[in-house]
Amino acid sequence: MTAEIHKALEVLKSGGVLLYPTDTIWGIGCDATSKDAVERVLQIKRRPESKSLIVLVSDDNMLLRHLHTMPPFADELMEYASGPLTIVYPRVTGIAGNVLAGDGSAGIRLVRDEFCRKLISAFRKPVVSTSANVSGAAAPRNFSEIDSLILQQVDYVVNLRQHEKALSRPSAVVKLGEKGEIKIIRK
Image (cartoon, rainbow, N blue to C red; front, top):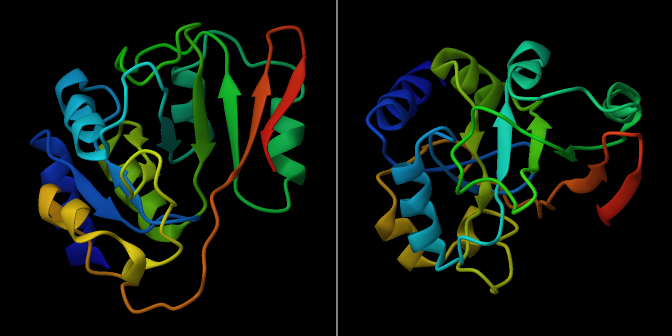
């Protein structure tokens, strides 16, 4: 795992795009603070810039650095979630503008996967995580379902968990308002 973290870290630092396993499904990722790197991800996915992207952080401190304020109930939602949970926070800061939704919000997940956590911690910046598919196509449930066009366009494919046959699922997504409003986006 250490060698893969090192290789992936070099790609992120150089502004490249990764294909990597997460705590949910395989993701296409890059430096979430680099507009150019995010633009490459959007091109690979053929995704309009108007659609926001999910960002992964390694710990609470990294999360807090990118929030204007912590909405009520966010800590409780993360603590009691039964599986991976992405929270859409209002007024996110320090992230590339083409990651954010039109209202300045962004989906952020405090990642639990050991590889992702160690990679993001070493990178010291949030990483984009969007499903490894062309926009509108079904998200691949394991590595074997990833389209060869995606594999050819990324700068590096992490060589971990590629032979797993388990069928993964995307995270649940909940949007929080600044005054405690909660909206379930995906269960």
